[in-house]
Length: 209
Length: 342
Image 1: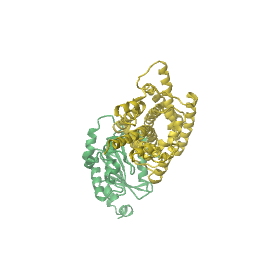
Image 2: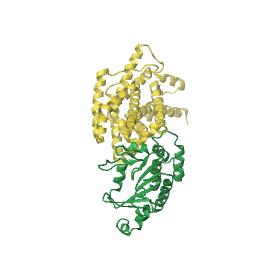
Image 3: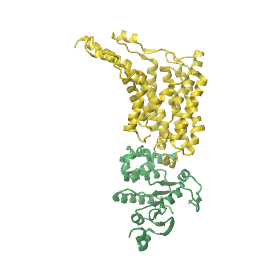
Image 4: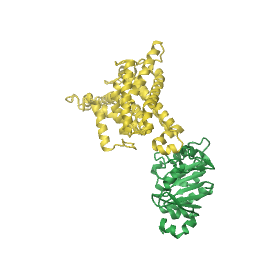
């Protein structure tokens, strides 16, 4: 992926999208193939080490510290940094204004969409060069989904490469520079998001017409 | 109304304060400190540590030994008990014991992701070993190691000052217990809420996987937790020994009210541990106190209730803790401030 590129991985249930993403981050072991970051081979690195290199990962579930406040969640996102984090904190609050209002509230009390914002903000606090999102709009209402995707475009415009695994295939592919359609663990189609959307076959088989 | 009735009312209040309020508050502080140690281990290390009572005893034992050493050197801080000077040694020893048992016992099971009940059984083993070690070193008898002024306010001083029939005494050890507990609680909440290490402990307790993803070092969190737990145990054990006396077996029986306190308040919640400590302490004292004299002050002149008006004999103290435990586990197992259930 290039800096600022948005790549989306779609496919039917059980195709292995989340599995692939977890393997990319090092949460699952690879049996074949390799992961390269900035030209460097990182297949053997542990997830914490990959985070330190500049990879950010937002899991699908259990992605916030529910008993801690929004601000504390963001502080934990910047745990491995030892410089002043207030600049990044303000950036995150600018991206997600509602988080500034609720920064002293426990993350577990927020709505699903707001919790997703906390989760993404937490990953952004580490200033990643690649941000990986595992089904960020799962269980989120359509309006909030659209807002989330707009924020994701903003993040990418900031120079961060964004990789998204999504069920909401149509909306995700609309803003994707590159789309990958996974079927039964194999990458079946690759192309620009708009190309994949335009292909009638793909639309019918994987995107529900 | 009449002076006699007013005097009776005041006497009744003083009586209750002396035999219920003050002892229950002191006992509540002791239980709170013990429950804080248990709840921290449960929250961060995710198992019920049955060896905590013996950790308290071990910390108290080392404090006693150093106290005797200091006393033999004629070193003292009268009117405060010399044990307070020796306490840092007890804290260091207790923290060291916790770190060692983690390294030699618990880490083995943690690496294998063993079920919490296995760690619980292992902690019972640790309890027996440490208990044996303590009896080996200091012997199975009672040890009294209090010195310094006994009373802040003695019964005689109180009666002279107020002219009341009922006396009220405040022992030095009681004041120290309450003061030290307050200081430790304030410090603990500051540490957990405002320092980076404290927040990382809370994060690790909240969501282990996400904490690891955030780069939090699990071994460091575990080590800091054990050090704090060891320190709390040493202080709790020493204060209890100062207030009553040091008996190697008494800490075993304190395990029940301590766990009841931690569970009532909600395992994993420090605020819960403190609240639970006072709930259990006050329940125990209120339910086993003979109210005969208190009621006779409140009733009409010359009337006295038959019998002691004691709901439960003091022999049944532990039945109160046990009863509270059963009720909480049946009705609301997560406790007052609880998150995870047992």
